[in-house]
Image (cartoon, rainbow over all chains, first blue to last red; front, side, top):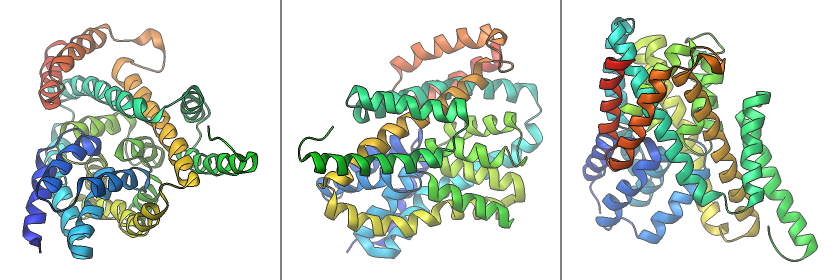
Length: 183
Length: 177
């Protein structure tokens, strides 16, 4: 049986050293847990699919799923604690300093420079996810429609998700009525 | 403080597609309630993206800390995670059993495309803040555009180590912006 302490430290290290959020963490978590034979590669890939469509953050969801797989409920708690703890500590330290320093010009300029990098990182995330998720012209139109609804018409993102589930259901019903092909 | 817990439970429940999708959701909840100014919010995004760890956790901790100190940071983060804990385990068994079914496949098809659109929304919001003085396109900052072009080149070569590009962004931001 895998030791809880081992689970904790593996996820702690990933939480402390991975930049770029959940999507960037997935391959690193995969290498760590599949490499230790805590879980098979096939099972891990299944969990990634679940983590992406379940509510919440991808990194947290994958920690819950892998933790549960290894050591049930306690394993999930320990894995989440490990992956989240470095963030919580680092951000609290920075936030407590910034309340005093936020007005300093140098800090503002540095943040303005960093936000330009954030634009690049978000673009990279869109290209990465889009190249997998957008498989045909209809889905491209749908992605653009979702964007427009939120951007131009202040649609809540929650409705977009609910509508997506409804459309998926509708498509299934239509496809089964027609008795043939999927889009 | 109950509001803080409620808001992050709500965000945790309706964030589908990961922390990047949570950005507009958190913005809608937190900025429009007047807890944090728009400028401070984008400062938080910059810090959340440039520190290690899940971006959603970073933002939740920051907002909570900003409101109520250490207790607020912990409450916001825990509230954000709780819906995941409850739903993920139930969903995991169901999805593994049914993932080959047409209905589930079609859900994934639309939800994943929608997620791309929603991250696009985050991108445009952040880009507007990064380049424009106000919402008007004529207020674009030329120095920001030039630095951005240089950072893209840097990112192309340093894709595997994005934190180096973040450090470069900070240093050159101080020098030229």
